[in-house]
Length: 219
Image (spheres, helix red, strand yellow):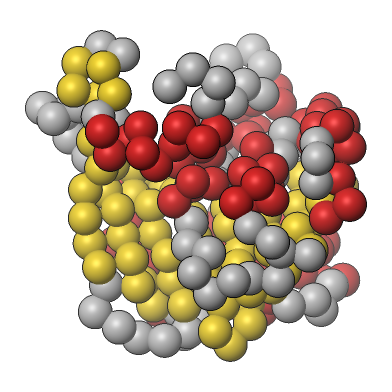
């Protein structure tokens, strides 16, 4: 799995102001977001869950090769198994979930599964996150903009409410593509803003550079 913009955005954007001690990354892929949060925080426990065999192996290797190996752990499991078997609580839960509901067929089975929400339906993600989130914790996701309203409805059904939403577009003249969203058990008027990634081809906006430059060698 290559490093994608969605993961980098979520790992850089997720709030750490409440100083989480325990973090969970659901559907970790090769561990990008968990590694970003290890770099950004002092959390003592950063757990990840990954179902795909190859991605799990790469995630473990990346964790072990990082300066934060003692704080990082990846479970080789589906989220449904994790929900059934675990009772841990986390102050911050993050997920860059699969989001294509239609059948994918790129010829790469692992990549297709990672992008199809049949492997992690949004309702299962929301319900599971609500089980593991501490009372004052934060649940942060990045999803397609067109799914934003429906995802808010799923979250409210389990008592979680949006506190912060950043709508992302690739360039000033394009439509919104993604929604970065943070939820908690506390109902507030959400702070909503916009992030534009590029002004022109490979001409990144000041806001995008400030958000992500700590994670790129060349930015």
